[in-house]
Amino acid sequence: EAGVAQSPRYKIIEKRQSVAFWCNPISGHATLYWYQQILGQGPKLLIQFQNNGVVDDSQLPKDRFSAERLKGVDSTLKIQPAKLEDSAVYLCASSLDPAGTQYFGPGTRLTVL
Amino acid sequence: AQTVTQSQPEMSVQEAETVTLSCTYDTSESNYYLFWYKQPPSRQMILVIRQEAYKQQNATENRFSVNFQKAAKSFSLKISDSQLGDTAMYFCAFMATNAGNMLTFGGGTRLMVKP
Image (cartoon, rainbow over all chains, first blue to last red; front, side):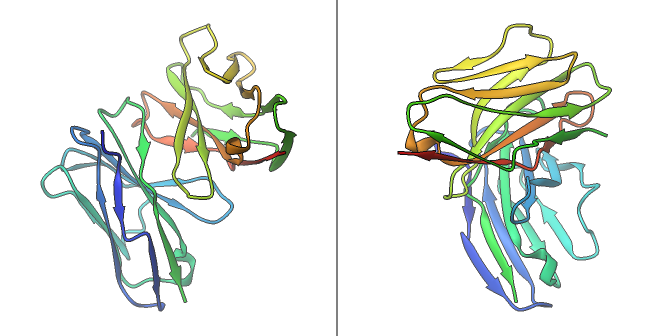
């Protein structure tokens, strides 16, 4: 069974630029999560989708971050404009249902200069 | 709100020996799950073990076992016969089933297995 796929693996941008990350969950997983992991810390949930609907986006900085999961499968997370403090690893995870175990992708390391 | 605390930022163990990583949590929820995830330098977060709070029996997965003390809100991970491949960051995580199923992670413990 294929795992959670993410791209790109690395991205370096200047502050105030925009960037987008892509995630493809495990086939059949209805729930998808985006986490932000700052160096030296545990991951922090940004947004949770159930199929193509948002369940929880209370910790998403909505003035600059946006995410979508249009067909209930793949998802994109966008940052516009980026700030220095957005430098982090962005992890995507999926689960069969909201109570299920979450399986993580390899992450995208973002560096904002 | 839930909090998860890992009080050991770094630990080391000799190959083939046993090590225990500590985790405590704070919650008012009665129905929840606890997890240990491993994150090697490759960054892939890998599930090590999962414990349902309603189960009294401690979960075990091969060389990995937990000591779940519900009253004390403690959830430690024991790694037996440590291997070099166990070197990684280990994160304890909490998920309340009545609170949106959000995973709350601790700050992590960096484990180094020495040959």
